[in-house]
Image 1: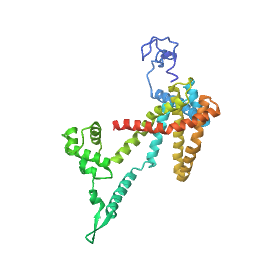
Image 2: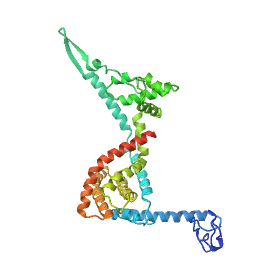
Image 3: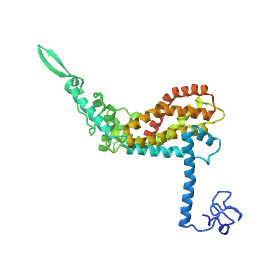
Image 4: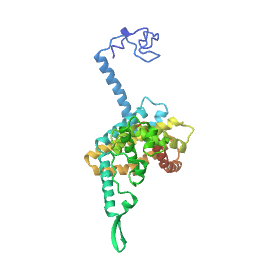
Length: 357
């Protein structure tokens, strides 16, 4: 790289954008490319790689150092213009969230086999209801057992690989939505040429937009193991869903701590740096889990009950430069509004995710 910067290799024109240059200029004043005509070598690639890595590594080091030592400091410095000193908050958050959820999958945090266990438990419960839920009726002095399930028309076995009409499923009190989706999928696989409105009519459903949507989405499932496929889908998309959800949650921060000094985009920087701290902490706790799972659970409880709220309070006070009591009041208000905000945001994000399933 040093030789490539030599004046002997400089040109009067930028090789990237053709901007006229002076021999004294090391870099193009228009696009920023190095003013050099020297051919690239392997050494040049390696030197450039390690220099860029070290530059980014120093940003990460500065970010992590102040993220854990001074709550709110990183966000405030970035907003005040010191962007070359710290890592990009949006890119760092996405990277950390990806690593975190990869580690969760690796540690079997999302154990998809539990869905099968729950399904088996539901089937066993259904069998027990059929066996036990009977009444004795004395007719003409004789006792005869009549199953309540039989009386209600519920004593029918349902299978995910079968096709059921609307009237069939209305007799079943459990798993109506599940068997509706599997029936749609099975029907489509058997009658691919039948259009959606006709398929719905044949299955006894009204040709509504919602039923059309469910029927069309049911075709995307690779099997009738719907719970596992949906869980797999959301787990794989979770980092991106959270990344998209934070701008909506930031609205609550922005409104509660409204300050003319900061616009919405600047508050967004604060939100991403705060959640980066949380995700890095959770990632470290995942490492503790390898050593002692019970200790990891205890530390997680302490973090969510004590450390994270205190960190948020200190971050808000430093970032907005408000008094202690004003910060406490708005902090309490923020937490009261946060739960409904999370519910609304979750509904919106899940709805968007299902559209692209």
